[in-house]
Length: 325
Image (cartoon, rainbow, N blue to C red; front, side, top):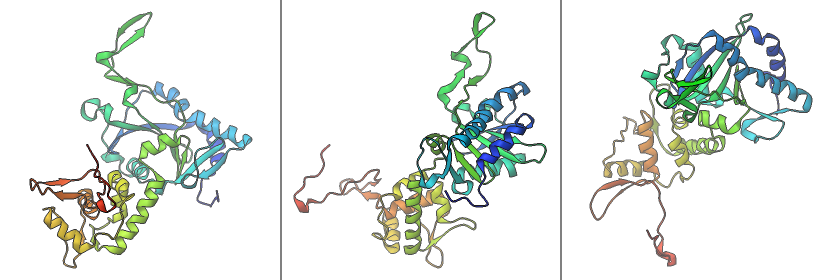
């Protein structure tokens, strides 16, 4: 990896943080599958568990690695290996960047988590924010939350003072003990690649191809977006579209054909005065991508319109038979 001045020196960070770890302030946040972030309350006696669970082993791993050949490599160009810590820019991972922005800039508007209003089964991740009171520098440890690890009062018991009793809390859950994700300033350090990818729906190889397809679309279609939004931003937030772009051949359907196709299918696809296709949100994007991928048909038997979920080209020019079943 070619280090730049902007990259965090993880070995220096671990060494410095080890010296102040007992003084760090801790806050906990939860985020759900839609990446809505909630603040939380917790009793102070949990601090003695939070720091070992979220921080101490991470520091120890890096400090030990400094003496055993641990290397740092860019996530986008490497795979997880022994003695390799993966790193990427926070700006590359939109959902992670959004979570940090909400915590740092929109805390006053954030709701406090409650089981009655937000349901723990919808929670995807937990974030521990650490602040050094001496200089107000912050960093974040993030872990995946699995609903299968939660305990419900209606179906759980607790063992107290030598006997089983009914579980008295609304719910409980087991915090993963493994190191997963660390965010320091503009850097994300990936200790567990698969969990990092699931936490933030980040698949770089797919996204890289999708980015190239976006460039092709922008070169062949005239599109209009609300102020402050562009095609790249919308695509990165639509996993369905990212997956679909992996197979689309851009250019087989022209802009004029797409608009005529939309009219035939009675789909709402508007244009502005300059003739640009208006994409207001993710739903419009889904429709547009579906049109250039020819995802809609009208049945010649019933006249009904359908969206095709999977396609297989039927070409009898080589004498092949259509698929059965």
